[in-house]
Structures are given as structure tokens and as C-alpha cells.
Amino acid sequence: MADLNLMAIFARVVEAGSFAEAARRMGTSRSAVSKAVAKLERALGAHLLNRTTRYLSLTEIGASVAEHCTRMLEEASEAEKLVGSLSSEVRGTLRVSASVAFGTLHVAPALARFLPLHPELTIDLSITDRWVNLAEEGFDLAIHVTGDPQLNLVARPLAPVRRKLCATPEYFRRHGIPQSPADLVRHNCLDYTRSGEPGRWRFTGPQGEIVVPVNGTLHVDDDEALSQAVLGGLGVGLLPTFIIGRALQDGNLQAVLSEYIPVERHVYALYLPTRHLPSKVRVFIDFLVAHIGSEPYWDR
Image (cartoon, rainbow, N blue to C red):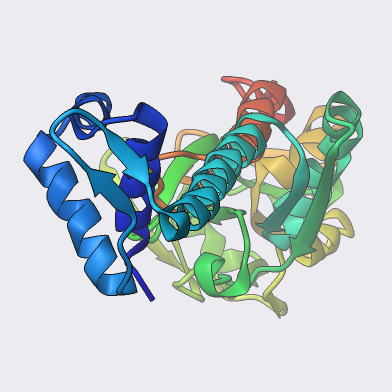
């Protein structure tokens, strides 16, 4: 098969009517254009142009080849226009993976505001705490809570994840309020096992970092399930405010040791590096940033 680039150059020569004009339009030399057409003729084994010192004309075979080459250029131009249109318009399907708690509580409810703004867009939302492979699994975007985004992804922060040491007011009435992290050894500390350090709670306090070994009757791998156990009065939990913000505001949970701050993480929008981020991805991320706010609405 002849080189498609050579065919494109031949079509440009036919369109321009001369080697010199085609070279000027393409920003190259007349000799380079002439050599390209000669190379195409050798590849096809056919004479395409009659050349004289004054003009060019197509041979019978050249006219047929030119028709196909011109159509090829037109199709390529239409393909470029289509890609540009799809990249600039918010349309098609946006495939999003979101972690279970944040996706359920904050991403899914926000879609009721977002999707009516973009009637030609469909969202395929996967709620999972598994780290998906964006390239291999065909996801446009992942929304995850982490302190360490993957280096091969672009990570745009959506919100800080603040955690509070809390229990119900009734639990504290029965067991007392801890005055320092060391007092936690006397409490039923309900542990989130996917923190990376099960059985150890890490804080930054007035004297620097403190690591506290904790013990309790419940170890669970889901933040929402843990919050329900804490709300039930079972014990003390270290929970993200994006889950318990309303319960704190309503007084159903009481936060303690506020001067000791758990190590902070963030919610990130993660996507593959690209020179041209599709509009559907950019617009959705921009919407989430505005929807959450510079101070997350669950912390206000």
C-alpha cells in the first residue's frame, strides 16, 4: 500500500495546480513536493502527472488516483472536525469511578443538579473502593480519598478530608470525656481497618505528632458502617466529616480533643495525563469543585 502521506501531498499538488504553490501552502520546498510525487508514482507503478516546463496535467490514471486522494483528504478533515466537536461539546458517556462513602453521599446526589445542565451527556458511575485502572478499564475519571495519589495520574483536589474523634453524648455521659489522646486506652475505640495502620490512631497535637494504640470491640472496613456503630452509642470513632457533618451539627455526635488533629487526607479527582482533556471531564470536575466549595459544605 502506498504511503498515505504521499497521497495527501499528491492531492495538494492537484488542488494547487503546481509544485511550487503546493509547497508554499504546505510550508516546504518545491523539490520535496516533486520528490514525494515521484515516489508515489514509483510505489503505484503508474505515471500520474504530465510535466512540462510551463504546466502540469493529470494522466488518465492520475485523474482517477487524484479523485480518491482528494476524497481521502476530505474524510481526514471531517474526522478532525468531528474530534474537535466531540472534545469541545459536553456529550457522550462519562465513565466515573467513585469511592463508596464519598460517591454515595456526595457524588451521586450532585448528579441531580449536574445532568440537567448537559442533556446530551450520560454518566456511567461505578461505586467502589477498588482502585480501578483508568486506561485498561475505560474510565474517564476516578474520585478517591487518599493521602498519596498515584504518580501516573493527574490529581485535582476536590476537598480536604477532616476527621473528628467523636461519640454520642450519651456514650460520653456514661464513660467520661477523654482529656488527652492517652485517655483513649480506657475507651471502646471502634477501628477503621483500611486506614493503613489498624489499631493505631495518629494525631498532630500541640507538642507534635502522637501515635496512640487503640482497642475496641469492633473493627470494620467501611466508614459508613463505622459511623452507624458510633451513632448507635457503641464507642468512640475517628470519622470523616463528609460522613458525620450533619450528625455533629444536629448534636447526635459530639467531637472531642479538637486540639489534636488527625492526619489530613484529600478527596481527589484523578485522570490520565493528556494534552487535550475532554470537555465532559473538565466540566464535571469544575462542577464538583464549585458544588463542594472552598470550605466543604459539610464542614460549614
